[in-house]
Each structure stands twice: as structure tokens, then as C-alpha cells.
Length: 303
Image (cartoon, rainbow, N blue to C red):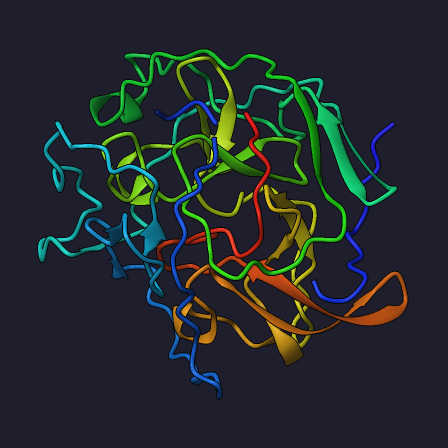
């Protein structure tokens, strides 16, 4: 049986495409009064290449435990704009196919622990992997990996608290979405903006070397959808136990990096299971780093 259990906080609340690290840093916060975001232009999204720090958490960056050295040239795909610093998400191709999977996924909150179990397969169709030579995507990303079940048996903090200092993220799983598949940070194995450079399927995912299907930003086939004028629903959990929500904040405001802290989150009142609680939580954005920039709480090592 699948159960998607929203996480309730009492007070407030790893293989790569390449685990969680432990390097501390101070947390850079967003402005006290959030800026009014201009419309995000999906045809000119800023490339995240180079927006990585191994020493400190910064708004709009990934705080990485290690920095891979790029061995591949960037900027060759036609959806990377001629200016070399932006990319066109509306022009990017996807891996063809519509393969269905027997996904299992469940959550249970008890005794201060959030237990998450499943087989790591998504509850939505995926593209056909390995990528076929006949697929136009093959010219840009020859992903040779086949999707395989990858067991999830995690015990995350059920009542997480914001740590004194944020923690860096590493290549590999940083959390899980309610689709049942893993979430990775915004970097590919070469330390580049994965959403911009790697080719995913129509739902935004692909497998890594051991076959684990994962995303680098919000999956595009979520059953949890936004409602205009309302806060986005919960879309997943991060390794420190905090929930991650979609792009809309209070009163349905579309959020940008400027509205969030360096870890890509903030604290305010939310209604969960009919109760109003003030809690820290993460949000997704349409701009890099898309999901989290660091762990605001204390992460559990997950795979």
C-alpha cells in the first residue's frame, strides 16, 4: 500500500550521476522582505555552471562537499543559448519512450522517525534507457544505463530542526520525491548544471550507472499540482527530514532564489493535516539550483 504522509514538525521545523557530507558553513539568508520576482524566462534560464562552492553556502549556489573536474566541453547542445550563459528549457529535447514500472513507495511517521520505503522506481512512465541510437537525444547524451529497482529503506528525522550551520551536499541521493524516485542535487558528474546539460526523459529523470532513476529538479509528472493563489503542496523529503514543496509560496507567489535562503528554504506557517504549524521547509524553483543548495538540518546518509 502506498501512503504519502505529509511531515508534521513539533516546533518548526548517495551513488552519483556520479551520500551526504558534513562540512559546515554559515547560512546566507534571503532578504527579510522577499523581493517581488519578475517572470522567469524559460527561454533564458541562467546556466548554473560554476555556481558551486565547497567552502560556504550561498544563495543561488550548490554547497558541494567535493567538486568534480569537468572533462567534457559544455555549451554544444542547441538549447544552450549563443550567449553561453543561459539555456532554453523550452527547446531542450527529451529521451523518447513511455515505459511503465511497478513502483512501490510508502512513508510512515512514528516515534520521531520518518520511515520511507520503496523500490526506487517512479510511479510515472519513463523514457527508454539505454538511449537508442535512433533517438535524437543520443546525439547529445548517450546514457547507456538501464533503469533498475534500487531499494529505498530510509529512516529520516521525524522532527527535524535547523542546524547551527548548514551541511554540504554530495553527488548521489539528497532526498526522494513522492513519485517514489530519488532526488539528486543540481550537479552532473562533471560539476555542471545537470538540468541544462544532461538529457532527461519527458518527466525529468534518467538513470545513473547502477540504474537508479533520479531527478535533478522537480519532476514534471508529479500528481501533486499547484493551485493558483495557494501554497504549493509537499512534493518530497530531503535527507535531513525537512519537506520540499513546489514553486509557490504564501498566497501562491512564485518563488525565486531571492526569496529563499542559501539552502533554498524558509520558515512560515503552513496548514498540515488541518493544523497550522510554523516550520522550515524547502521549495523548488525554475532557476538553478532548482531544489536545495545545502542541508539546513542534519542529514542522514542515504543511498
